[in-house]
Image (cartoon, rainbow, N blue to C red):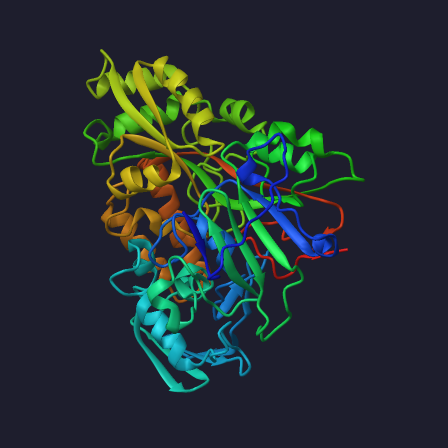
Length: 501
């Protein structure tokens, strides 16, 4: 189905290539070729409203580019002004007063005023929001428009995480006039506007002619979706793409070493690749079974086989860029004999069968096949099933119909993924939940850090999951592209600093 903000369909001429025709570059007029940007992407959105739609595909394209927030996070993890030019925090850390940029407006020309911000934030914490979004709004008591340029937010208790989280999807400010159609036609205040969504193929953005800040530098931006990462590489090699947003076949990096044609940008992400356990599944309710699985997998060998050895081991739901990171990767050393012993103690000496249902994303099926072989060696038969992203969201994330799964959790500072009610792991540990609350309400950053370290160790001790490795950021561009954010520590592929030449 074609979804567009235009009333007249635009027919794109497709260039024949070795990749799927749906992923080929439109044939632009020669005078506009240099101002067009084509970006290869692997994770498709399931909708265009980050408040009601789960998954990283939506904010990857739209956050900061189409939808803006009061504050944003830079590549070093620092909170910077965006729609709010300044903010004040009361001495008791309960009241946040935001002063809005006076010239900010939506693409429609309507002002981004306090009433619009309040309308968004009430919607963002309402019943239609995903459980994870609602959970992030938990510390907030009231949201008020003091005057047209001032918003005052009062918390129930101090929260270290709340302002940081406001820089992500929970804090988007969309045009209230477009709320009814936001999932198919997003309207925000960013430097780009939504133009077309050809589902499964591409999303097209154009410059916002009413933008209040530095305008977008490209006449058209296409985020092009590839199910096959090798096809995306081929498109880059044949000149159909300007950017690979993240190289998902790291073994192929040598193809892009020619500096006259390509620039390789290497950095870090917040993407923990997790072997997730369904704690509602009878065998996986047993700590010894979960510990056995952790001991049965050689994670270093897995990274070598699946990701060319380029993903660091972390052992927890905390990336090294967070202040409370500790290397817990050796908490469960590879020890098949120990795994068999634990399974025997759990009553599974004669064997065990588990379903491993994974999304068709570059890292997941290869990891699943590797893990299935290793678990077979200790007496666990694994039935692997590969699901398209939409089915995975519905059946695994939504309906919890699985025993194990593999997915990268790319949301920054998301330890609450294991604590919010209804989480798809069905994990519920009151001690862990209390540690997160204490950390968030702590009086000093040092106290917060110690509490979160304790919480991360508790997750590890409880074998709540098996953290396989951290996704690296490997972005490939043509050499004329500048302004690339090397460290991908927000959910946005931020276009606002990108330029050509």
